[in-house]
Length: 150
Image 1: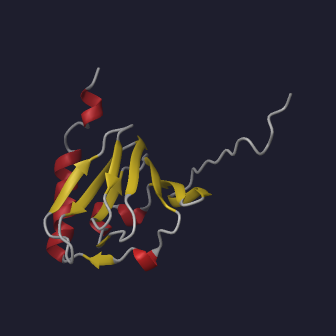
Image 2 (image 1 turned 90 degrees about the vertical axis):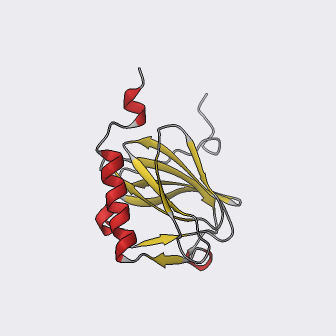
């Protein structure tokens, strides 16, 4: 007996950048893969989502989440070197951006209506941009947390 085609939807994405794969009701599942704009030296802005949290799961490669702790400005910027298979929930209203290794694949779960209209961007100044490059160098010049596990 064949599987009913309405029972299972299979999506994949092997390109670069961001691709929404499943939209259902109020939520969306997307994949983010390496793209040149996410190189640390090219990061020039952060964004926040005013109406929703956003969930990230590192599936492959490496990803650093950069988080700003201010409301109107990024404030202090923190870097989190994501570990595979852990869930990272960036809370509503938190400035964030990320950099990825060339082999990275990140699962994103967000509200379906997350758009530029409800997700303002904040331009980073030269000092903040340099900080992102420096933080990336410091984190990625050491072994990833998952590579130390048996």
